[in-house]
Image 1 (cartoon, rainbow, N blue to C red):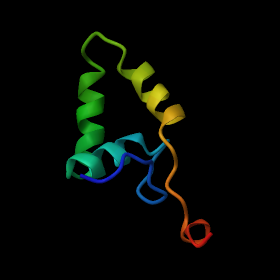
Image 2: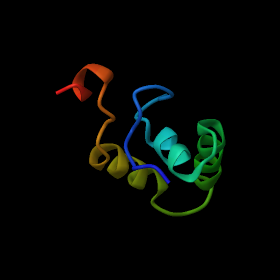
Image 3: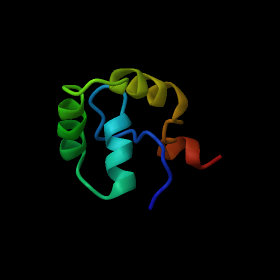
Image 4: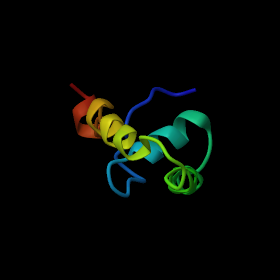
Length: 67
């Protein structure tokens, strides 16, 4: 499993679903569908998404990795 960071490519909004998809070895589209389906259930899914967006570090670009 890879580190849990928000990737620079493959993002739609915050990159949270792309990060989770990379971590669990699935496609970002599959993770987005799972997230949208989970929003139909009661619970704090949207707040969890916002928290992960704020707490997960963004993946460094290639120029930043050379430092």
